[in-house]
Image (cartoon, rainbow, N blue to C red; front, side, top):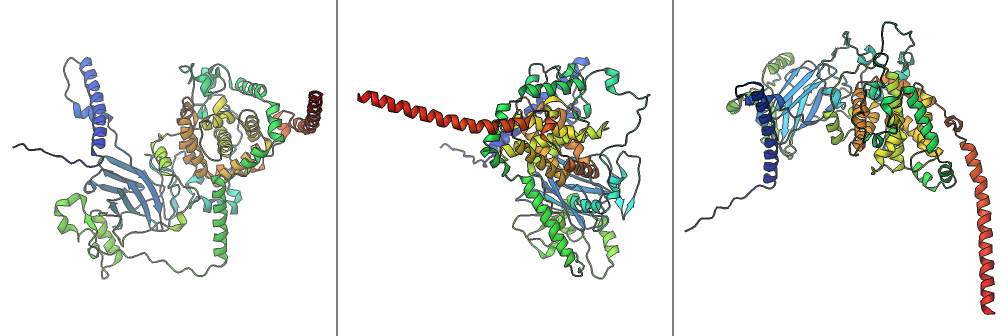
Length: 612
């Protein structure tokens, strides 16, 4: 008799197993090379496998999002393929730490959190998400920039603001920035009420110190990139440099020569016939002008929310105090299973010991007792209804939100400390890059194409020529010149509309600007050559912008709204071209009619000759 053993595999199991084996092969190969290198350096063999393994294994940062209400900071982290019973989290001042193999998350907030017994965590088996409820030290205090993922992952400790007391430190952070509270919309309203406190984006002019020398003066080499931090970047990319930027000899010319080369190249490439064609046949241009981009929708929502808020304030009634929902004991719901990660073997005995709740004991004493007990992790499913769920505050809703893909990009960006040498130059370059992005979105109806990366780089003087600007007017002039020289649609009306789009994005604040930069990064990352520009500019812009002063951005936006550009500013006779094409267009029409009459006469003559 022969027995046949049949094994039934779980769907997707072999795929996951193959992925794990591939990762193990990579780790094993790296570990073997490290041990071999150590044995070559020393005559004896080495067996320090685990020590070397820990040196290059990095914990995984989970995908997460953060909300808040009056009482809690709510952190939602997606952690698939874990054992929930091994989870643990800590609250220490402004820091929150979460560990569950192989995930590790450390967040640093602007204000303090507190352990008062109300902190807890729940794990949903179906969605594979942890939800952490972190009590605020001061109820009602608003935590800013909870969607700035890279900033929250920063290891540096922030100065907490507790009970309205501001602690001054010797950090480079501006004190005006540390006093910012509330969301971006509320902050802008407060700044409009007190214009005297606005911080100008242009720095005060001071005489240079003769004892300090810049790197340009010392090394005498061209600098470019974010804040001019790169030198000789293209030395090893001579074969690809022409595909990346417009000036191949970028490492051999100075900044002044770079500007002259850019202007000469634009003068050479400007095609007056193409410009007149788009002027006399504006059908396609009109369609682009009527396209509604996402920032226009966001601006409408923002204006509507402000209008509703003003109406509510005018027709407001006495606000009744909102009672915090009472947290019921887990014993009333049989579908919820509470675990204590530190003493799982004694789970049955500890269910009633992880929290005290009594109406006869004073609240402060209950909180002190609960803070000394272990934190709870509640494991539930999608269909489980828990009375402990607390929804985020409606006031935390923003008109600009980030997708999971954008959060992942911010999570993986490197955290750096920037000793910015010329912040004004960075802000002007930011306008140039955002202008080029707006042109691409409007010219492609918001759809990414294979030409999107090319469009963005060609319209932007910063990305194509490593240009640096000193005045706001020069940025707009350069953007207009390139927008009517290189892309498919070359129209002054279109460029003017793109300028309005740029102003709208800056009015919406740093979140909208950051969302645009993340989209630019995605477009450039998929290009064969343009992805180098992410290393030179976009990555650093994405990180730096999260720490940038909101007041300086607001001041820059006000100056941007005041800029007026005329056709004569681009140094091309555009008005003469437009007048010429209007006159020649009528002449062309008469010539066509005469040609048709001559053709008709020839046909009649041919027909008469055939009859004879």
